[in-house]
Image 1 (spheres, rainbow, N blue to C red):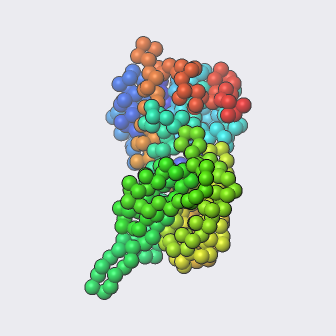
Image 2: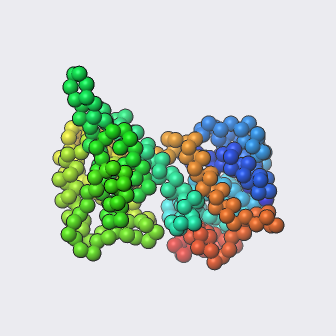
Length: 374
C-alpha cells in the first residue's frame, strides 16, 4: 500500500500529518510512504529526515500518483488530489460540518474520506483522538499566551522589597484544554479556580490543586452530553451560572474559556458587562473564538481591548507548537490505521459495523454516507 503525506496548504497551518517516527512504523507494517517536498519545514522536519526514515520525497503529483491512502492535517481541496487511486483513503481533520462542498467533492472523486475529529470518545479510541491531543497543547499555550500578555508575575514572590501576590486564574470549561490550562497555571504558581457545567469534573479540578466553582442547588443539572461533551443548559441553570461567574470573575486576573458544544456555536460565557467588572490589565483568552467565541467582543485570531481588559481570540493554538502538535497528530492517525491493518492484504481493512469506522467515515463508493451529513 502506498501512503501519501501532503504538504499542508491551509492558511496559517504549520503542522504535518507524519513524522519520521510514524513513517518508520508504517514502513514496518509493509507500506510504501511518499512525502511531498517541504511537508515538515514548519515543524522542523527536513526532507532528509523523512528520507532517512524510509520515505520517498518528491513533488505533489509524484507523491499522489497511485496513492491508496492520503494523510493530511486539514482537508485539501478535492481538485488538488488528482492521481490518487480510486477508493483511496483520505485521513485527517476534514471539518465535515464546515466544509460540506469539499466532502461532496471527495465523494465525487471516489475517495473514502475519514474525519479524525469525529472519532468517538470511547476508551479504545483515546490514542486516536486528534481533538484531545491538539486541545491539550492549546490549553498549555493559552496560559503561556496569557502570561506573556499579563503585565505582572504569576507566582507569589517574597522579596526584600516586598511581596508580589500570586495572579488569580479562572478556567471556564474543564475538558482536555481546560485541565491542561489548570495544570500549567498551577505549575507557574498562579492561584487557580475552575468551573464546568459537568458535575463530574469537580474531582478533576480538585486533583490538580485548583478550586472548583460550581452552581449549587439547581436540581437536575448534570451537563453530561454524549461522548463526554457538554450540552446546552436550562434557562434556570444559565441564570444561576451567570450570577456566580459575575461575582467571581471580578476578582480574577486571567480568565481562560474553553467551552464548546459540537455542531453548534460556542456558548456565551462572559458578557461585556462582566468584562467591565474586571481589573484593568486583566487578560481573557477565548479558546472557542473560531466557533463564535465564549466572550462578547472576541474576534478570532485577533486581540481586542474592552474596558482595559485584553481579549485574545485564540485561533488553533496547537499550530503555534508545530513540532509537538505534528508528533501527536501523526501518532493519532497511525494508531487508527494500524489498529485495522491486515498483514495479508497489506492495508487497513475497515469493518462497516465497527463503531470507530462508523463514527468517522464520511464518504464511500462515490456517496456521502455519514448520517450527520445526510
